[in-house]
Image 1 (cartoon, protein in one colour):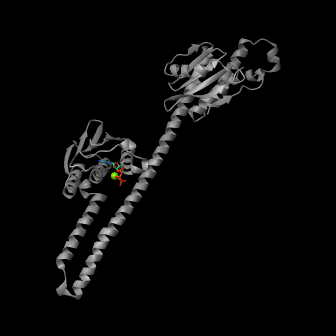
Image 2 (cartoon, rainbow, N blue to C red):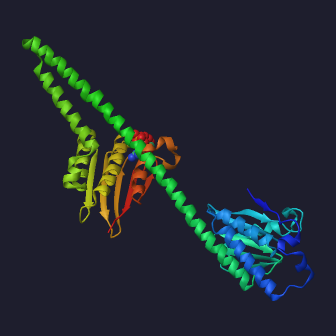
Length: 379
Ligand SMILES: Nc1ncnc2c1ncn2[C@@H]1O[C@H](COP(=O)(O)OP(=O)(O)OP(=O)(O)O)[C@@H](O)[C@H]1O
Ligand SMILES: [Mg+2]
């Protein structure tokens, strides 16, 4: 919403003058004093504002209300779009009556990425740090005094922008943490269900079988009981592997990836090639993140891709470690998934971003899928 800033009632107030001052001509000393008062007023008003839009709006307010300019307009680039943030009103009843104004936003857009004050008719357009423009009319925008004012505005804008970015990062970080905690809870729920449904039921069946065998040793089906025990052992091993394969800690990521890929190949008949070119072991955290990404990507391949072949490639550059998981399956359109339909993919992304990395998904129908995860290497 555009704020309209009105000059204070009388021009006397605007200039901060007293009655006796109006009666005598302004001396150099008066002028310097006025300048100093304006600098003080501006610094006091904007240096503690925490949002770029607030800084700019307050700055415009001071410039108009101290009487150095008749009117003005402030523009800010938000999400790549230049928008009017505030207008400081002049002798026109409403700013829309000003015949120059419709063009002003276009001029502001043009001037924003320059470092020059640009004069357009009776307007001075002042670009600030490629993100804002203040347009002013009815005053002198080229004096050293005015440059000081702009330096103060620039410093305040920089400070508020940093603050804004920091608080955005903080919000993002806490969202990530919440999502991670949620994912952890969901994982616990899944493990608990696996233990209850598979292992629990198999052990119950075995107990019943053993009871029957104790009561009637001759009719006992020991072969069936042994089969149940071995299936259960397989289930327990699989659950343990899903949780955290001991081989990841003991032998590292390469061994763990190969082991997981072998397991998937045996169970689902998907040929998986694993290629690892990493000169030394990564940190335990990095290995865990990359292992989880590969695990989720392979689970998706098994569940959705109908692929016959897949590959896992882990390589490093001096600055990054990169994991690419590809399949030759049916592919999909990632951009068309709603947030609720891509919880697994988002989880992968969030894990990687927590380590300042990035994850990209390339896929289209009929063309297979490839997932690229990249983590910066800590030196
Ligand atoms: N390798 C793939 N091949 C084809 N489609 C895929 C592949 N990976 C993901 N998809 C598509 O993307 C969707 C989202 O995947 P995502 O992992 O986020 O969720 P999910 O696997 O459906 O559920 P979960 O939350 O249990 O992981 C899948 O439902 C599927 O349609
Ligand atoms: Mg999934």
